[in-house]
Length: 503
Ligand SMILES: CC(=O)N[C@H]1[C@@H](OP(=O)(O)OP(=O)(O)OC[C@H]2O[C@@H](n3ccc(=O)[nH]c3=O)[C@H](O)[C@@H]2O)O[C@H](CO)[C@@H](O)[C@@H]1O[C@H](C)C(=O)N[C@@H](C)C(=O)N[C@H](CCC(=O)O)C(=O)O
Ligand SMILES: Nc1ncnc2c1ncn2[C@@H]1O[C@H](COP(=O)(O)OP(=O)(O)OP(=O)(O)O)[C@@H](O)[C@H]1O
Ligand SMILES: N[C@H](CCC[C@H](N)C(=O)O)C(=O)O
Ligand SMILES: [Mg+2]
Image (tube, rainbow, N blue to C red):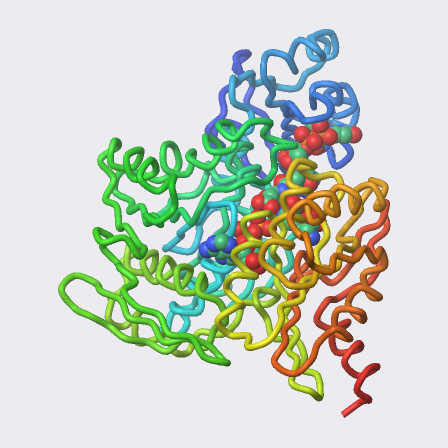
């Protein structure tokens, strides 16, 4: 997180910050973590979920911080140490916003075209499709989010929306690598914590709004307001909002954007959508879609499983157009789009034809959407493997079980990432919901995820399909503080080989 290694310096004032004392020290790096402070660092003491960063100001000063940015509470906590120190102090109501702006100035130039997408589900999919469209159009593009930075340049990330120091360093590196176009995910945590406040967006997208992350945001209203920061605060007035108008919250998003004079491209099946999906026909490997843009009707083949992927693809195309791309050129790329890793990804097929898919559905709505989306592609029965993550929204667990039992014929409830929680207690909550909705259906609890996958694959006959939900692209299972190697796609192949013999 620290940028000390970069041998760069800047005065405080050149970073847009003014200390009340008039001090203007040379800054050698930015950090939000006192443990990373080195002589000359600018330490941001942020209000945290667990503790106020002000508690660590005394350590930062001892390590040689040249300046501290914090809020009134932080300054109060460390009043004595700050009074005795030579370090410059900047007190602001919004230290996270200040961090974002400072990081933007510290790292300098970004790729020229940046877009961001928010919503409970679909952010990774939409930003990946936008990047794929741009690349097919011949542009040097990346997507940035849950799966890291991917596309014309790759780089791992720990967060969906990285904190500002990581984000702006990555954007500056991307530009140095020749990247011109970036599609980013705006998570609700990221928006709430102002992680994106220093980026200049050409366009912003909204996919949908359903339950997740109430552990953090507490109420639906607070969760929605955090997401809306993208349209009410971040997107400049000359930017374009691209909104899924089929979502019940879509009209509200349009109103918020239009209220600021922002141009809106509505996308969806609704009769008044500007980019309108008018038809969809499914087959074993994908779908044909029909859609209208301006006065023209278009047809495209999508080699993607799941009706909702058409919504994601059109939202991505809308964002590309909103950011200045030629619409016809963007539409011509659609047949070349490929599955997003871990999203409705075909993982394996049994000798009898039973197919296994891996999907990242980890909310009630995503589980319902993913299972419903599989139906038109499946002749026989639909088997689901579900589980919920620990140290996350507990309220969604029974609802995830319900969604699975409602839309699948057979359900295996297993562990996702238990993190620091008791896995049996998480499973019990998911089972409770599944049992409530699964009357007459086979609902089985199998704690060990590899065994659940083996049992799910074993349950497949000709024409059947299995959806392994929850972990998508993830390559590890977090149990306690340990991350053990685990990959659903790999486990699916192992299970098929074990049952059918290696091919
Ligand atoms: C819940 C959450 O978002 N937490 C973020 C928050 O940390 P926090 O408020 O818990 O921090 P804290 O532990 O209370 O500490 C307060 C401050 O003291 C500092 N500190 C702490 C200890 C110390 O010794 N010295 C010190 O300076 C910390 O760096 C922090 O700035 O502020 C930190 C610094 O900005 C973030 O790194 C941290 O993200 C944590 C790591 C995290 O896991 N966040 C997840 C939940 C997240 O953001 N997820 C979303 C995805 C959501 C989705 O699925 O859509 C994401 O965008 O990835
Ligand atoms: N448009 C959509 N509507 C409803 N569900 C969707 C939609 N798109 C994707 N999903 C479901 O949500 C899951 C996660 O998709 P994706 O990773 O694109 O979302 P995300 O918003 O990036 O998630 P995260 O919050 O973890 O970053 C998919 O695996 C799928 O089950
Ligand atoms: N970004 C999401 C991912 C959840 C993935 C699921 N596998 C889990 O662990 O709950 C979160 O942190 O809530
Ligand atoms: Mg994501």
